[in-house]
Image (spheres, rainbow, N blue to C red):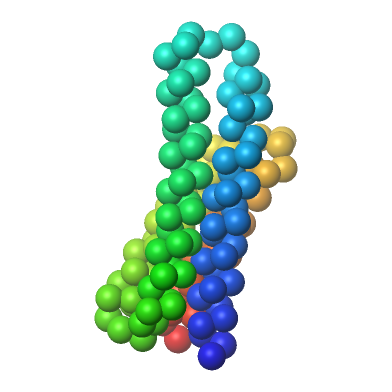
Length: 124
């Protein structure tokens, strides 16, 4: 039962962070100043895609946990999801972590925490 709770907490944290990632999209893009229409659209698209990808990882873990958390497919989903989150954590650590804006600095911590919770809940 503790494992299931860890999985849901890790997945939930991931989904919530992905959702909160989407809200400031307009302000983030505005913060870049004058951009061509194409560059503004590309930046907007990439910001939204990252948020949706983060939500997808959390949603996938949630669905697999609800259906069959002990099966081999679930184990694979947990491992791949955690690895994806850890890759995002490293990218965030090397890029956004250097920015003074606190939410960017939280990304590596949140991604790593989510990955640990998912691995701990899914593989222990």
